[in-house]
Image (cartoon, rainbow, N blue to C red):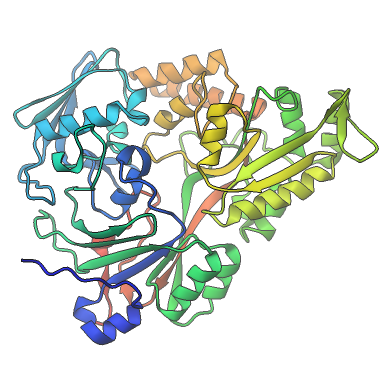
Amino acid sequence: MTKQYSYAGWSALALVAVMGAEARPLAMVGPWEIHSLDPASNGVFFTRLQVAETLIEVDDKGELQPGLASAWSVSDDGLQWRFTLRQGAHFHDGSVVTGEQAAWALQQALHKPGVLQSVPIQKIEAKEDLLIIRLHEPFAPLAAVLAHPSTQILARAAYDDKGQVTQVIGSGPYRIASLQQPQRIETIRFDGWQGPKPAIERVSYLTVGRAESRTLMAESGQADIAWGLDPVSIRRLQQAPKVTIASVTLPRTIQLKLNGADPRLSDPVVRRALSLATDRVGMATALLRDPEMAATQLFPPSLSEWHQPGLTPLAYDVKAAQAVFAAAGWHKGADGVLQKGNERFALTLRTFPDRPELPLLATALQAQWKAVGVDLKVAVGNSSEIPAGHQNGSLQLGLYARNYALVPDPLVTLLGDLAPGGSDWGVMNWQSTALTEQLTRLGRGKVPAAEAAALRQSIATTLQQELPLLPLAWYRQSAAVNRDLKGFELDPQERSYYLTRLTWGNR
């Protein structure tokens, strides 16, 4: 019988004193809540903790690698994909990972909102140790979709009779020892894991809302890894003797989502004026302490196939912005706010504090746009308010950070974000027939390299001209790490915490 331990309230240093370095657990803190167990809503949390696996994995460079599928192939017509499952894999409840169970888990995912719904799937079935997916039409990035956390494969016992996930029973190197939603999770090494035995036996994660509190916990040794640090905290921790700062540039963009149905935002000329009134370099320098992260286009350089060096960069020019507003019929009223007839240029921007830089950027934007006559109200709430506002039509502006490589092929994310109907984290009430056709052409595959590059360039150019999404900054992820911890790396794909690579240096 395995003993269960509770470490609630213990600091990492106290645990070392009591248990010894050999059994020392790893304590992490971050701003993200465990709001759901379902892969469709919160799958990335459990892949990062290496509790659950997907059929396809991804290396540090974004290249597809075997996961629960040891190999895969596609028919010449692109309509049938066959995945061979890894032999000897077991779920944490002891059940065997079979083609039948993998097919069943993907069928559950297919019935829920997520990237799998973007795939023209006709049928998912199993044949011995094979998983077979049949399509209505070719879809070249299917393997990349099956690396997305929402497609993780869980045991049958993880689901209730209605197909809802009630517990996370994965097949990764760590299993869940205890879970207290929405703040705390503890995992323990899974002895049935086929790969190398992880050096660290136990891992805990605690949701801590304030960046200042996470900083103090890292500084004092209560946390071995602290995620979601603001620039001020990073500078402070750079002076801390027992902490080191790790950072990596991500394929992520901090951007504004604009409601194209709002009469103040429907004209691309006006959206251009808002862009001209935005001092990206100033915000990146003063708030992010990283001027290189000022976005000149939607796609960051880390997305090498999509980033277009030849595009005219998004610029900051207040006088030009004022001239564009005036040409579009917007003039300042007695209160200094732009007016057009009886319409005032007053907007509400929604954002959230999970990423601590977002409220800071929103406040800076409020001041910058005030200079050209835009009355911007900032509402800081929960991240769920942006997709909810998209669904009910109440959202005017949403500020968030979008990862364009959570599916390793950015095309999959773009097919959803730029769809004619828009998406929760993509465009809203905006569409381009030509752009949709170009994305569809890429999705069907078998496009010559030169043509594919030309299509990506055209898509990026349309987004730069129309600005249905207003990029503010590219993204560099940072974490504070205990100097005793060896082997720590940040995943540029944001899929894994690489816990199996870690060891304690004082062993």
